[in-house]
Image 1 (spheres, rainbow, N blue to C red):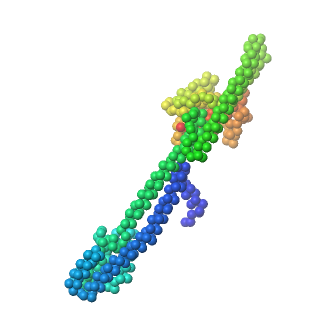
Image 2 (image 1 turned 30 degrees about the vertical axis):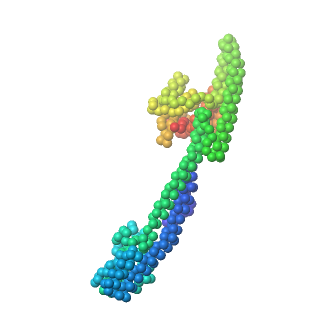
Length: 452
């Protein structure tokens, strides 16, 4: 079956490292490894084979000399003279085996040695073929330090034991060892440098994540390469601008809150002192609704951004929110591990949960709240109701600020369309999010997902 190139490409892409450290290491180490393999291959294919061939030719020439010298004078005295000279001058051990014949077959080579010994045997076989006219047999594997060569001569067999380094280059493994050591050292150096650079980027990413959740990153300082330090400096400048903007907005909201609440308080006082009547009661309702709307607007604009992050037990926080909904007349059930912890801004999360629970209580008769850990890390809080729900294609519309869905889920006269917007703003301020789905109870399910 032929695989499509696009499928192969996607498979290769999936096998590639996903982290910057892994990819940088691959970029540096892979070329080094390829270079070392190429150099090693060229060495063995060219230099090592050439040296081995020349050594084999030299050994074959010495053996041919001994055979020809003996054939010219096949006497014991002549052979003894040849043997002494070969041992003293050439390092060869020669023995005459009278009445013997060459072995009928070549000695078997172990399978795991075959790739290494095959070039050696081919080189020695060619050299002996070139220099000898007589039948011969040789074995390069029987003795670790010697090569066994046997040549048929008049009256028997001449056996020659030659040191292995006379037949081929025996120091090739030293070259391979040095190449391996060099590769390991270069890789170790690359690991150190890459790790230092990646650590600086990781610190920047962690600082950005902490700041995005509303945490303090005052101890963060630019580190690493010039480009990373530049990005870190830009992040610090951005953080300062955002904090300055939040501070200015908070001061402005405090002034607006004071300016709006003062006339509202006077109106409430005047209405309280007025004679009770239907008109007065309607005016009191209007003032209460206006006060509620001002609270919603200010809460949405303020965003609870200045609150400190704390580790809290989610079950306790959910119980507190649920009790408030129960006092307002809702039927609420709660599930969750009492020991389940999360690092959050308590008041902000409490406000988000209160908006979701009260919204569910308004549109349904029964509300279920549950907290549980997520398999991939973090926690999630589920708020279910048995109300009419929201069409799936309008989930995102429900999160828009000041958006009020009509029909079944828009019967809350006091709502200004900020409950879900505030809740999502709080969740995203913690580094998480809120999603909507169909509830098992038949209504709407709101899920707050918070990172670990």
